[in-house]
Image (cartoon, rainbow, N blue to C red; front, side, top):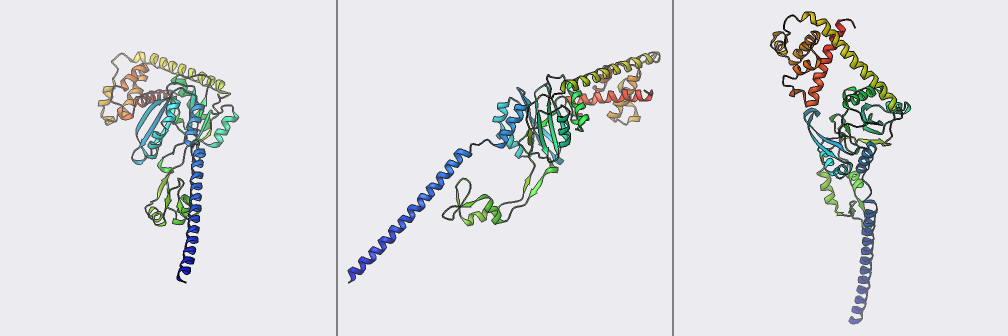
Length: 384
């Protein structure tokens, strides 16, 4: 009797064990199938082009330069520029350096691009969408359109030939003035933003709160057939681990991405006609300056019986209280009015330390502006 009972028990246990083994075998097959799904998914979609890579390649191809200057501008206190990391790279090197650029951008540096040296490209900054549409209607269609923030755009206009520095700056300012762009940012080699990276201006910062646990878990994890929590790479997590991860989260800062709107690379249809008008206006301005200078020199000759004051006399004059900017303008007005040639006036202005004005280009811009103000002041005084 006892042996018969033992036999039935052993038979029942064997069947249950066999069923358990079958269930284990089914679980293993499902697990292998799930892993195979992830392997195929990653092999097919994991190598798809990253949006940043795609945007950078399209923008640089449309700009069409052999070499580019890439700038990573580090932010200082109050969103002020602190330090520029500048690199000169061809397109392929820029693309290969995207991880480095992402690192700089993640640490809130701005990522900029411009052609290396003189080029046939003109940047127009701070445009509204209506202005970009107007460019297309008027035949000055952009080769590249970049949305730098939700309501602002930068465009690169391509011309048939390269410009020198003076003409390039004049064309940039004329385009900015015509379409409502930023004239202060218009010159022959101004930086524009590189698409695919964040615009890290402080005014665009958005603080994103940590989502509730259930929402966060649903966004980043999913259950497999066995009810376990898996991330996108197939790693398994228990509930307690997920709760610890969620508890360690903190609010994040989010910035808008610089978006590539269009990268046609076209040469503007009306470029030659527009540039010709700018060139005529530029030559007229040169002729006017020479005429005014000759007029001042002719009127000043009878007054030059004595020795003219130099800039040092103005620097020592207590009326200006040591204010270098006031001294420079006062001397420039005096010197131009007494027939001193403009190059000599500029040389005198450069005789003091102008490093606080910025780099060499900014110092030259300051000198040019001061001389132009002096000439304009004299012209206005003479009722021109």
